[in-house]
Structures are given as C-alpha cells and as structure tokens.
Length: 114
Length: 117
Image 1: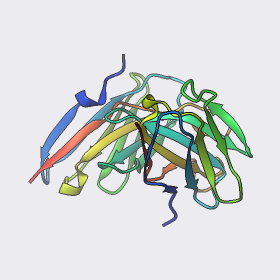
Image 2: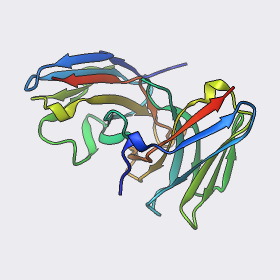
Image 3: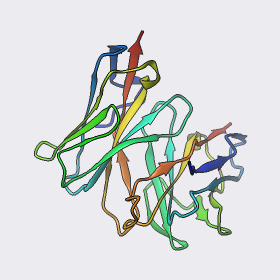
Image 4: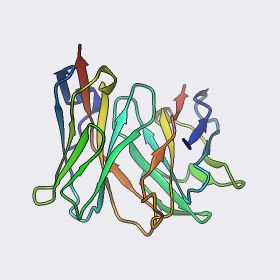
C-alpha cells in the first residue's frame, strides 16, 4: 500500500560520501523514468532521466541505474554536498499519446551531515 | 533558463469558494499538466492537456476541477467549490513535443500552496 510522507524513508550520509537512493516501480509498461529533487516548499526539480532501453545513465555527480527485471531504479550521488539535502522522488512514465503521466514514488529524504 | 511560473504562491480560501490557480508554461512546450501534493505526501497526477483539450485525468480530477488555456501563454486550474481536503500544493508542469531534441522531460513550477479553511 501507499506510505504516508510522515514516514518517509530517510538516508543520512556524511558530506563527501557517496549516497544511493533506491526506488521500486510498479508498471512493467513504463518506458521512461525520472529522478526529481524536491527542497522544502519548492517544486520537483529534474535531476536525471533514463529510458527503458538503457541500464545506466550518468550525469554530473549523479548516476541512474535501471534494472527492468526486478523493476528497480537507483540514484547514486557522488561526493555529496550540503545542497544535496532534499527529498528525492523517482517517477515512472506511463505511456500516453504524446503527453506524460508521471507516477511518483513516495520519496526518500536525504540528509547530508557536515 | 526557461521555467514554469505559477501564481499565486500561496492562497487561503474559505470552503465552498472558487479558486483559480494560474501557470505560465515554458514557451515552446506543447503539453501541460497539473499535479498536486498534499502536505507530507507524494506528488499525484491530476490532468494532462494538449491541443486545447484534456488528454487524461485522474480520479482526483472530478467535476469540481477544470482547466483552461485562455490565451497563448496561460494555463489555469479552477476548483469550483473548494473542500478542506483540497488543501495541497498544486504544481503546474509542461513538456515539449515528444519527438523534440529536448526529449519529453516534464518541468515543474514552484507550486501554489492552497489552504482551504
């Protein structure tokens, strides 16, 4: 079932360490996945995306891994900084004709300790 | 960098009143969306809009909700008779043509926080 946000999974890491945030998605027909970062009181901010025909994609300090066999997605953040502290959501795209319908996961609160 | 802008940033309204939330999507985008996030919960899809009509809507988007693109730049969400449970952050979003070089990433605005009292 769904998790209420007050019981958001949390992850604390030391500044400079690497972090891995995991996400399970539900629909094997989803063809596109996005990681968003949400800071308090702000909108979701695009971090990185990956299409279902890929297993891995790298950006600046971030890497997304996709395992379609077990419907699992992960976000790796290298050399974490205080500004990385936020809630991270994975979102899967349910294919529509042109338009998108993103289904968001419950989110993980990442805290970077100085 | 182009961005989705929303107004107001925060609105308090009496239960039963009508509310209009406004959005200016990124200028060359063709698809527009509204999502909402109840405090402390995940972001939920409400509606998608393309070519001046609704593409898809969720179960949340019942008859009290409507969307409109009144001119070439604005995209609005109207809630006709607000209920206490409509209190949430409402996010507007937009995405370019699916086949554009930008791909089909959805970009979100900063949100409009609606409080129904």
